[in-house]
Amino acid sequence: MRALDKVIVVTGAGNGIGRAVSLNLISKGAKVFGVDLSEDRLIETLSLTNQDSFKYATLNVANREEVEALPKQVIEAFGQVDAIFNVAGIIQPFIKIEQLDYERIERVMQVNFFGTLYMIKSFLPHLLERPEAHILNVSSMGGFIPVPGQTIYGASKAAVKLLSEGLHSELGGTNVNVTVVFPGGVSTNITGNSGVDTSKMMENVQNSKSKVKTLSPQQAAELIVGGMENNQYHVYAGNDSKMLNMFTRINPKKAASIIAEQLKSLIG
Image 1: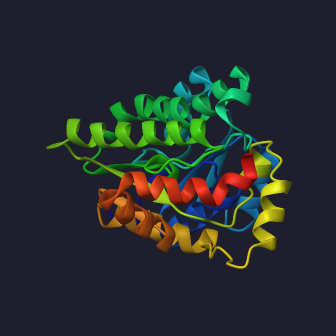
Image 2: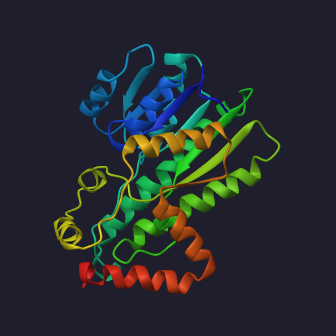
Image 3: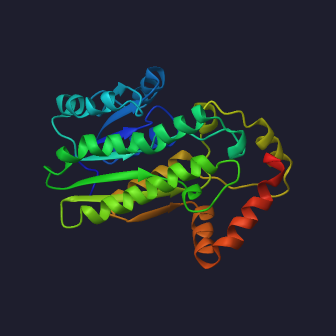
């Protein structure tokens, strides 16, 4: 589905990938309704475009009642809704499950999985009424390969993967297509937005001889929007995501052990 003349809801539109996706869609002729926890960040996104193409609402995607009220707001603002991009997500503190409290576990699952589910359930009846429509969900390469210290985050993103694939199968033969995206390393502030202290991890990365090459949010956005426009089933955004996907398919245990060895010093 082409972005031109479509109305698309983007969660996490206040910064990072969500902001970059919003601006990319607008550059291709779409109108975007952005969602974020922070109105200040949404206003910053608005300052980079115009009020005719970008409107927004401040809400928590983990709050089902707020999400269920959102389609009405979008339709009042733009008259229709053609797609949703579930970009908003948070990580967990970089610690093992045994050290992770239930409050943190539930927050990660609520935002990453249930937030995505609430958006789908709330908007799908409206999307099914459109001539063509799209649902795009952002998972993670942590959704197909285990990352010690991010096990709950990975579980939430693996749930998003299977939710997306199951939905794609259920919607076969309808006007609604589904894409799931697996970003690799992208230079965003997800750690700060998640309330996670990663100072130890960053010190390790800075001292490492091999630097991890990350995508810019704009590069990631181009791949993500292209996933919708080309009706892709999976989008592996970044060479790290592509390579780890291939390696995991060939030898999943070996791939997992290599990641675990690289991260051993970070989580003890």
